[in-house]
Image 1 (tube, rainbow, N blue to C red):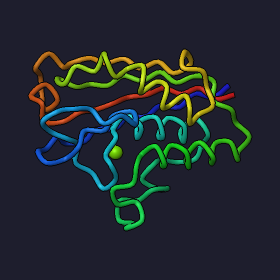
Image 2: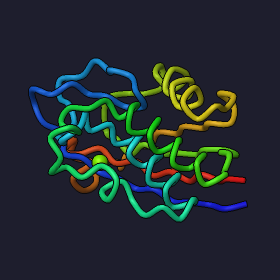
Image 3: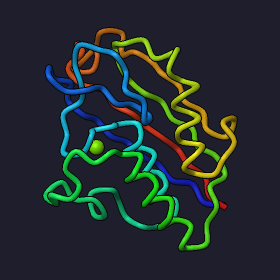
Image 4: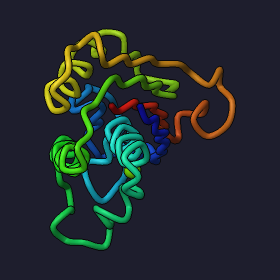
Length: 155
Ligand code: MG
């Protein structure tokens, strides 16, 4: 059994779609990034890579590469999963926390879990997604950014 940790943060700006866990979420702002900036999936990718001893997401999908511009992070997750499988690992479970002051994410949780489970060949119950606010504190608390952290275990 191996564990991996992932963390990511992206700035919230006007004029971008908000994509979290592969879901487009209605909101007045979206996350800034080279890809679709899906901060949750980036944390999941980093946790997978960490558990497999494969470095980090920036090494595999550099934001200087035109081919990753505006790419769906579901595609990055699928490619990451393939690297993990190529090393002989299966994913055991995923547990993630989204740190966001807004919007409320409760109604999107089931769909995000299903998206991630689908790519990682898991049951939805093996992908747990939690959400918390920062109680108004710091950049995330002021609604300037969203962050996510994730732990993955592999077998
Ligand atoms: Mg990122």
